[in-house]
Image 1 (cartoon, one colour):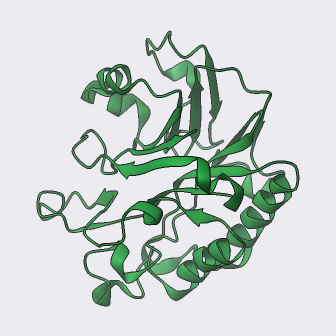
Image 2 (cartoon, helix red, strand yellow):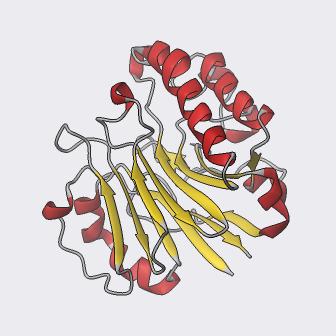
Length: 252
């Protein structure tokens, strides 16, 4: 079995002071995917000797965005970005290749308050990222994970009616996720859990996390041929340190 954890840590240097190392040691996943690291590797001091293979994709802009993958097993290849210059300066994608699959760690652009980036997200990022995934899939199956910055269905957030045109729940963003599913990818969490009330992100305001007024915007999705190998897909809402919860995929 391979355990993969994905977590938007909302600042790697910040979460190191909030029990991150202890969490990693207690769960000891085979692969750890991080989003919103907000750091270059030379800015981080962390003792994770059990992960000899560490890969970073930092944004050009300091203190912003960024992704990382820590592996116990050496990948066959590692790629930063999706090969399109206009998308690749924010450190949003790392792909590692293993014998049976590609693993893509992604931090999808937020459409922002006022939806200032919605046009870019909907017309450029979403179709280009999906095309990248489908091109990988021509070679071998794909797992992709991370903060997709969209709640797909009404069941995926606590207050759908009042959020219809807010970033993360616009018709355009939801259509982008519809197209991912229509292309064959499977939202693994929904293979195991059909009811609502399960979220991966909560606002820091109004005791939202205590009240479980949240959004499910972090996902593990897989190519159809990998579905029989997926043994579990779950959220760890009790793990603190970020405004996001870690998510876990167990695959045979």
